[in-house]
Amino acid sequence: MKTIASIVLLILFSTKSMSQITKGNWLIGGNASASFQKSRGQSTIVADVNTLDIQSNVGYFVMDKLAVGVIVNSQLNYTKYPQSDGSINKDWRNSMGVGPFVRYYFLNTESRVNIFSAANFQYTFNWDKASFTSAHSYNASFYEISGGAVIFLNTSVGAEVSVGYNKRSYSDFDSKLENIVLRIGFQIHLEKE
Image (cartoon, rainbow, N blue to C red; front, side, top):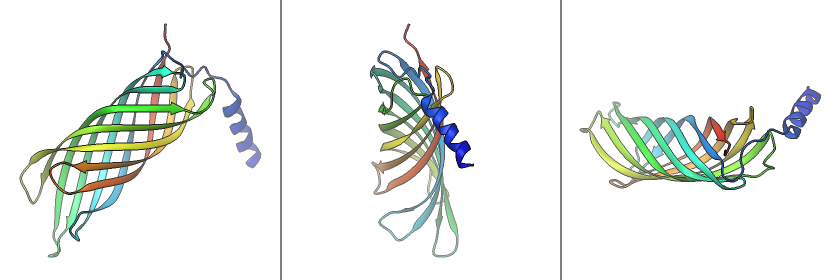
C-alpha cells in the first residue's frame, strides 16, 4: 500500500500541467465550509454556533505565483444559547462580506500540485433574528489567513483544500468569533490572450 501511495505522489508532483499561475492571468473560483464551535463573550454563557460559509473570488496575477483580488462571502450562522432555566434561545444570523485578498503559490508555475497561502480582509453586513430579541442589522470586520494545496485537474481548473484561521469582530457589541476552518473549493485559471 505504501508503494502505491508513493507512486501516486511521485506522478502528481512530477507531472507538468501549465497551471496558469503566471503574471497577467486571471483567477476565478470559490469554496465552501461548515464549522461547529463554542463561543464565549464577557458573560459566562456558552453558545453553540453552527456556520455554513460560501466564498467566491476574482483575482489577477500581478506577478508569477502572486494573485490579488476581491473576495465575496455569504455566511449563515445558527446559534443556540442555553439558559439557566433550561430553555434554549436561538439566533439566525446572515452575513454578506466583501474585501481584498492576496494569494501566493510556492512551487514551480508548471507543477501539477502546488501549495499556497492566502490572506483576506472583509467588511461584513449582518442581519439576524433571535428568539429573544427583534430582528436587527449590524456590521463586522473579518480577516482570515489560510494555507493549502491545489491539484490542477487540467490546464485551467484546480481543486483545492485549505485550512484557515479567521476572526470576526462586531461593531455594535462586545463579541468576537474565532475559528479554525477547513475549506474545499475550485479555482479556474484563465490564460491571458
